[in-house]
Picture 1 (tube, rainbow, N blue to C red):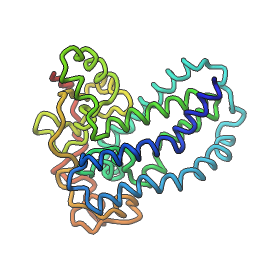
Picture 2: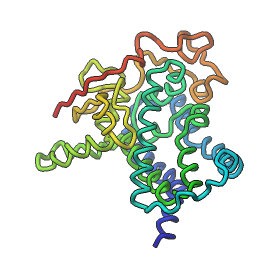
Picture 3: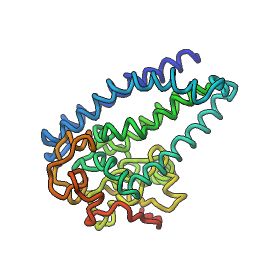
Picture 4: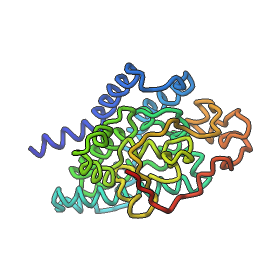
Length: 302
C-alpha cells in the first residue's frame, strides 16, 4: 500500500500533474474560458513557463539533492524517517505553505522582488496556465521545490510528496477559469461548506481577487489574498478579502504587453516598452500600481 501511495504521488509530482493540468487547460481553451487578450505574446510566456522549467529543473534538482545536500546537511539523510506519516504531513503543510505565504507577500512588498513576480500577474486572464506563468530566474532562485527535496532527503519523503501533490492541485484549481466554487455560493444549503472552505484553502473567488486589475470595485484585492494552498494565513494576518464574486478584469493596470522573453528571462533580457519595470533603466515599481501598499484589514462580504 505504501509503495502504491509513493508511486501515485511521485508520478503526480513529475509528469502526472503537468499532464492533468494540460488537459484542464485544453478544456478551458475549447470552452472559451480564456478571453481574447490571450494573444501570441501571452501564449509564448505561458508555453515557455510550462515547458522550459521541466527541462531545466531535473538536472538542477539532481545536483542539489545528490551533491549539495550531503555537504550542507552532512549525516542527516533520513534523520526524520521515524516521524509518522500524518504528523509529517501536518508539519510540512504548515511549514511549507506558511513560508510561501511570506515569500509571496514579500514579492509584493519589495520592489526588486516584484519585478520577478510581475510576470505571474501580467496575464490579462485566469486559467491553469497562469499557475505555471513565472519568470524562469525567479523559479530557479526562489522555488519551494528545494524545500520539498530537502525534506525528502531528511526522511520525510512520503509526507513531502503528498503535500506537494495536494498543494499543486489546490493552487492550480484556484487559478483555473473553471469556477468550481460557484455552486457553493449559489445553493444556500452549501453556504456552511463554503464558509469553512473559503477560509481554509484558496478558491477561485479568493485567488482571482488577488489577480484582479484593480481593487476599486470592492472585489479585486491584489494587495492581499496571498495564501497559496491555505487561505487561513490571510485570515490570521489580516490580508484577506472574501466577496464570493469574481473580478471583471485581470492583470496589471499599466501592463503594455512586455515581450515574452523579457518577462520570462528578466533581468537577462530587458523589455523595450518604455517606463516598464522590466525595461533598462525603468522604475522598480510604477507608482500607478504600487505593489508595496499592503492592506491589513480583513474584509469579508457574503
